[in-house]
Structure formats: structure tokens, C-alpha cells
Length: 196
Image (cartoon, rainbow, N blue to C red; front, side, top):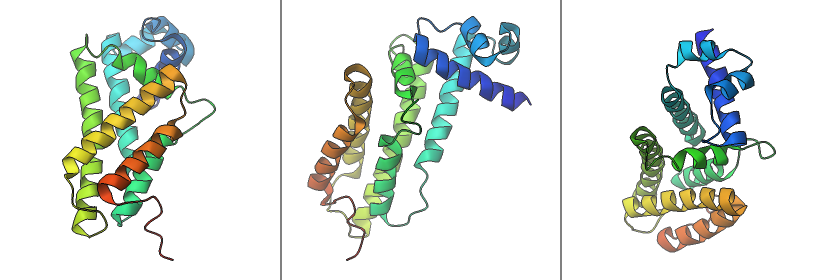
């Protein structure tokens, strides 16, 4: 019951962030969205910062689960990673990128947020570097610096989300550019794992 209530609060936090932004994020609005009292929220989270830290923890865990791939072939894992990153869970109602940009805008002022976003970047970096290193070892990718490629990919993903939120640019446009860039660095093309 406690974890279910915390999940409801975290979901409500996401909704309020998407609708009102960080400046408009209040415990009262979260309580209203979750159909509970502010006292009930304060029972679980003493401060808004504590709640937002839990929100970011939940985000990182969900993102890790989304990135998990059972594929063995590094080319399939790379495709699965790009699918996970560039395909929204619910395209019609996904305000998630807005919520993340709202919190990222606070990272220069909130050390805790900065640390959580560094954690998120580390997760992406580690996954990509591992895929690239495995692909090189197995002869599927050309020899390259896997850490450098991982940094490039992570930077492009962050930029893609910023462009989506600020400019309304579809994520698919950046994915196309990223795949072309990966072809230059790795000699990889999407679907190259499929044998004719």
C-alpha cells in the first residue's frame, strides 16, 4: 500500500511538472492531482526536493528497465537501445520530455538534481560503451573508441530531447542523424544484423 501510494504521488508529480513546470510545482497541486491531502504527501516526503529526488530515482530505474535487452548480438542491442530512447512510451500523452527539461533547468542550482542527471547520463554511457566494445570484439563494428562513441550518443540524445521540447522537432530526425553518424564511426547500419 505504501509503495502504491508513493507511485501515485510520483505519477502526479510527473503530471504537474508537465502541465505547470518546475515554477508551478507545489505540494498542493501534486496532492490535487493524486486526489489526496498535502499531509498524505508529507507523510511520505518531507520536502519537495525529497519528492523530486524520488521522482528522479524512479525515472532512472524505469529507464534502466526500458534499456534492458535480451539480445546477444551487439547490433540488435544497439537497435533496441535506440528504439528505447527515441520511441516514447505513449506518443499521444507523453509530456515526459517536458518534465525532464524542467528539472534539468534547475540542475545548475540544485546539486541533487545535477547528480541524478549525471547518474542518468552514466547509465546511457555505460550501455552504449558496452554495446560498442562488444561489437568491436565480435567483429561487427569497426575499431573505434567506445567511450568516445558513448559520449557522442549520450550528447546527441540529450540534444534531441532539448530540440523536441524547445523546437517541437520530432525525435526521429535526430535518430536518423545519429544512425548516419554511427555508420561513420562503426560501419554499422540499422538492420545489418538481419541475414539475407
